[in-house]
Amino acid sequence: MVKFWKKGDKVYVLDVTGYTCPYPVIYMKNALGRIGPGETLEVIFDNPPSCETLPEAATEDGHEVVSLDKIGSGLWRLIVRRR
Image (tube, rainbow, N blue to C red; front, side, top):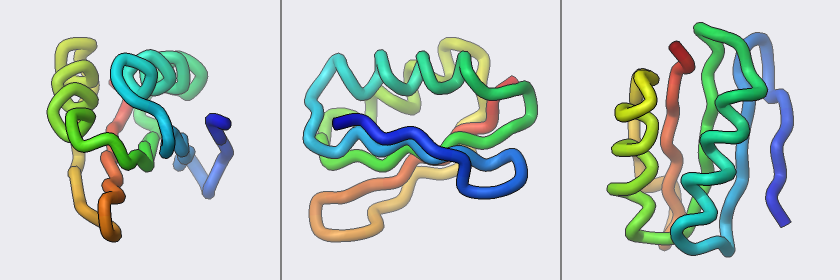
């Protein structure tokens, strides 16, 4: 189940663990459409190909990729600032 919540002031989290491509990209784009310009989205995922597809999709849509970090065994966090 996809989880989306507000973590703090202008910071949102999208958890798409358990989903494979293309779903993490689809859910990320939907979540970015729900937040305002300048706000940040943290995407938590466990699908290795998403390490490439999520940042590419965010950049192609004009958003800023702030960071991509491995945060656990088979778990990553992408931080995107909406433009």
